[in-house]
Image (tube, rainbow, N blue to C red):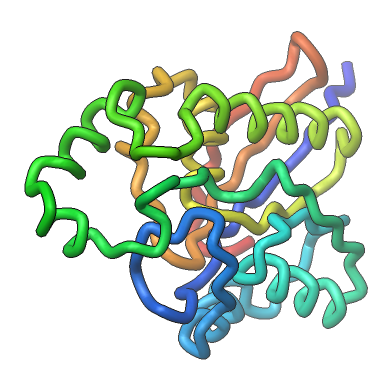
Length: 202
């Protein structure tokens, strides 16, 4: 019996201009180092049928450059944007800790009950990212896709695949330009998603 297999590679953006901070939906572009990180991550590989990207510049610019280089169609999906950090947007961890040394620990340990002021809630973030994920799986069953996005987006998808509780998603660490692969066998209710650990070869 034939089973449809959909393969999705998740690629986080490289380093943005301005370095490490709670950037959220601030639209900073990639730094020169960030571009180098992303090209190094994909190398000469281009097995994808299509690329779907967050519309934020640190993802979109590379996705479109990669698509143009290899003739791969590229689409944007705003639901793949990073979680909105509210009043933390644009601030560094050092700045936040200087005001309250326990603030970040509370958030990482219990993000459901310690949401930053004005930030997008975790349930709302989950709803929009997973709506995009399910629609992508339905529309592109049997294809090999590349999703270019953010650490939060990738955590949310991987948490969903692994059936982790929502408040544990930040236990997944994702480096700049890191790639994770998810393989989904079957479609709809019977689909079986699996996280695939690979040896660096896409």
